[in-house]
Amino acid sequence: MNKKAGLLLAGAALILAACGDDGTQPSEEQNDTVEETEVVEPEENTEEEASEESAEETEEAEETTEVQDAEQVPEAMNGEASELLSKGEKTSFVFNEIGEFSIFCEPHPVMKMTVVVEEGAELSGEVDLDIADYEFSEETIVVAPGTVITWTNQDLAQHNVAFK
Ligand SMILES: [Cu+2]
Image (tube, rainbow, N blue to C red; front, side, top):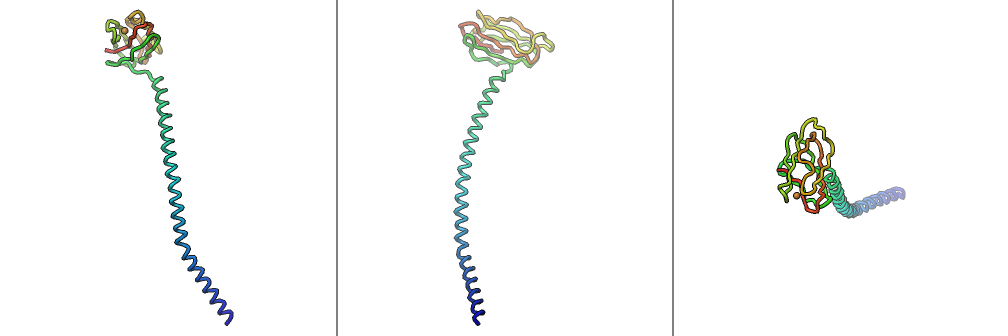
């Protein structure tokens, strides 16, 4: 009888223990919920960090774009025009299309020159021209497709390079 009683007690203890476990499980779930809530907060922080990172990436992208703009020469085409150039300032255009380009200076439309783009022309690559004494240094120049012409203003007066 003592053994049976002991078993019953042990069984009762197990049941109680089981009940106790059952009783603690919801609170554990609550703890889990709290933990999950806590996990969400770091995720928000991560998102903020991510947005900061993406902002940094955007800044980097802008910097890259600026570098590319500095390297990327605008293409010569009708209606295109450079900024006004002060003394010593330069502007460049790439001549990709075969044909004739009429160039003038917007503040002084009397200043004119012509760029002829021909396959197999002697001049190619990079060509430097001046703007001096209210004149382009070449009246007509023949270049191969893909040539980049750079004009440097040598005058105190402001000039630019504009395409008709
Ligand atoms: Cu001019």
